[in-house]
Amino acid sequence: MLHRSLPGFIEVICGSMFSGKTEELVRRVRRAQYGRQKVQVFKPAVDNRYSDDHVQSHDANKILSTPVKTAWEIVERVDDNTRVVGIDEIQFFDDSIVEVCNKLAYRGIHVVAAGLDMDFQGQPFGPIPKLLAIAEHVTKLQAVCVVCGMPATRSQRLVGGDGVVAVGATEMYEARCRFHHEPHVFQDQKPTGLKSKVQSKVLEANGISEASV
Ligand code: ADP
Ligand code: MG
Image (tube, rainbow, N blue to C red; front, side, top):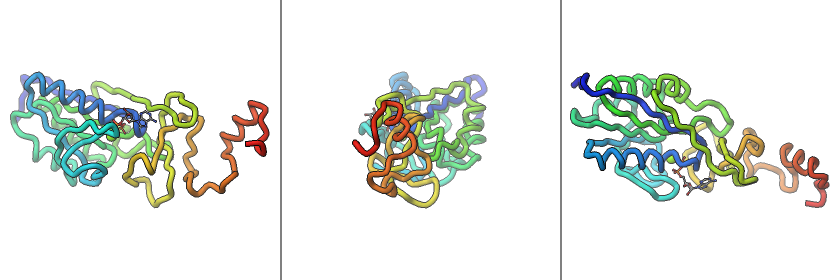
């Protein structure tokens, strides 16, 4: 059903892992619920890190959600009286999620989509660039770099694996700033004692010899 009288729109929440995307999604969706708006939350079936039927942050903040296998399944499952649709881990969908979000917005729905802007190699992730382009509102969040404490924009993969998608949390990734992000080095495959180029540069800049650390 088309709700032409209601203005629909798309909000995207993006950022690195641990930047608080899911927390923010949950917050926005909860606010809508206080306003007695019917809300539905979806996530790709591939993300079952914590639970099959909840969207959950690293902080254990969670809300009921429906896992879906494809983006179009969302359109099929949204009820006529739903006003707000939350979608988490949006980077795991293919490009059709862009058309799906547009379709929902034209139906008068407020879409809140959250996902990683970059993969662990620092490359734009899946459909995110297109979604950012068509969204009315974009929020880019940052975590805290675990090496230096500065704002982190990137996700460091700590263990090796094949492919860009390796769903995992704390034990597999950590938040890093641009300076400390090492896109091509899995930390578990780094020869012990060998400093990365960035670490060597930091030591050199501070007049510290590598052998002494
Ligand atoms: P995202 O969905 O972006 O991965 P979450 O909303 O699931 O993030 O979790 C954010 C929470 O992760 C923070 O509130 C904090 O409790 C926790 N956290 C763990 N590591 C970090 C970090 N390096 N920087 C910031 N927050 C972190
Ligand atoms: Mg999340």
